[in-house]
Every structure is written in structure tokens, then in C-alpha cells.
Image 1 (cartoon, one colour):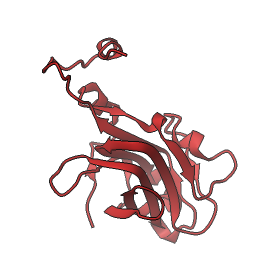
Image 2 (tube, one colour):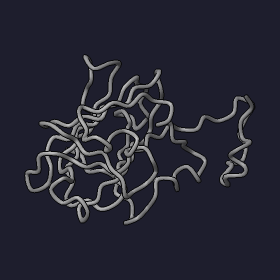
Image 3 (tube, rainbow, N blue to C red):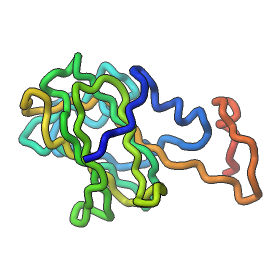
Length: 184
């Protein structure tokens, strides 16, 4: 059982992007859910609004599947809010990676105690290097107060930014500079 890297209350993972060392790649993935209530699905999970959420509709485990072309991933960020969601708040989460649904391996299992804010989960191997994978699965194994369905408000997936093959350049940290930092 590992403990997630908790950021200070209210810390936004977009601060990671501003460092210029990572970028969010969730928009490049195909997302699917084990179940959802109508109007509480993937769109709400990815809309950058902390007031909306995915709500499962079925028996546990509740699953979020994130599929990519083979991609390097460094950090997974999950927003949870016990005060708003109470028994719908996950208390035990498993993070699995693999090539497809049939060979997923658990790399992290998290115990969450009344979480409030962003939870940063490192996706690294035993040498602390980011992992390469085709698929990430987040499984909600238990909720607070033995709740049946779950709420997840936001999920973000980050990849490391590669250095230029020409050499090292200063990091671009403002949005204006980051818009023009690569050549197509």
C-alpha cells in the first residue's frame, strides 16, 4: 500500500505544467467507464470543472480506463472531495497499467482518508523512471462509509516533456512561450 503525494489543499496540477517539465495528455486518450449515471460520465470527468463529476452506477469495482498509443506517463492526478461527496468518495483505489485489458498489473494501491483536493500519484518504475504503457486503469475498490457508487471529479494524466535533440534550452514557463516551444 502506498501513500499518494498529496499537494497542499487546493494545489492545482496545472502548476506542474507551468514548470515546463510535464504536459497533460488526457485529451490524446480514449476514455471509458465501467458504468455511469446519465449526464455524469467521461465529459464531466474531463471538463476542468471541480463542481461536476463522474458518478458510477453499478457494483464495485468501478473502473476508469484510459487508453493511448504507447506513451510515457509520469503522474496521475485525481481530484476528490470528501466534504462534498461523503459516502461517494473513494477510500481505496488501485492503479493498473498494461498493454490491454488482459495483462494489466497493479503498480499502486492507495488508501484515501477523507481526501480534499488533488492527489498526485507517481507512475514510475522501481528506478523512479516514468513508465511506458498503452493503458491505465483506475479501479475504485471501496468508498467511505461503505458507499456503493462513487464520484470522481477530475482526472489528469501527465507525461514528461522531452528535451530538444539540439541541446538544452531554458524552460518555457509562461503560457505565451509554451504555445511556441515546438516546431510541427
